[in-house]
Image (cartoon, rainbow, N blue to C red; front, top):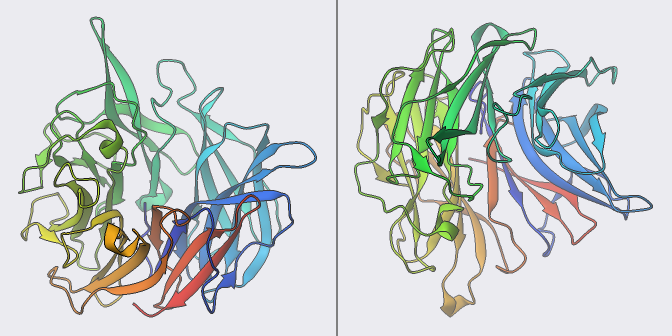
Length: 411
């Protein structure tokens, strides 16, 4: 879930343990009793803002939602914002910087009680404004503990979640979009986006996203769990989805098992030209070691394909998961993914990036940023801007307690 407004990339990867790579930058400080886990990160002119959860293990277990401003080289700046503290049940924080200022709008999920929560904080002063809640009614609450929020023109936001839909006695899950105003009040929605209904599947996959488009609207992209295909749906500036969804994957894609569906991911970014690039995991086989590829396709602003579906990587013999994409200032884009190595090597897990031109053609071979033992390295990643044209690999380091650390690299 990425911002495309600035000229570089930040790759966030969640891991359980492993060696600290040479040159790693500590983003959060170890206290010997906390677990820090990256939620979302977005670039701004000062560098980048990271939203994350912290679970304090001692003396009493508590969970918090936090955000912090970092300089482009990963130094902590300003005040750390603590938006919420609960005994547990806080999920998927998204921290969105407000333009060039020091204010941050954070969204997170508190699904057991109040649905989705938003709050504005100032990293310069540490001041927090009052909470606002959305989708708190029982009929509106998200069906899964994951969401995406993207900033739109005019200070608005597009919020994408799964919602339940009961048809007769059958429960379905459907992607829904809610448009939120600058005052953090709902303008429209939640409204189901068109497409085949998907039967109830408790996968918790991040298989949907949204991206802002010229004119103030958004383009929602999602993998439909009924047929396995990837669709896009334009949403107007007033929050009204188009009447029909457009399939963008050319290759067929099986629905897959429940475990495979949990690996499905869809991400998108708006390029300097206004075009959109969408990337997704493609289930290609039933063999766990080579079941997934990372695909992408360039679209017009309203979701019409302008290029062919392409594979991001050269190898099709190993499992590629967790795709992310960010626009670059020269008009191109960068993709990242995680490679789960084969059995001959002991199934190591590695993190890769590759640069592409505005036409979607690769500029160079993929570059490996880090490799570690598969049992220690996580398979969650995020890509966003750092403000100065570089990539940063950010991961949760350690085994309970954990901290966030980063590695800078050129695109």
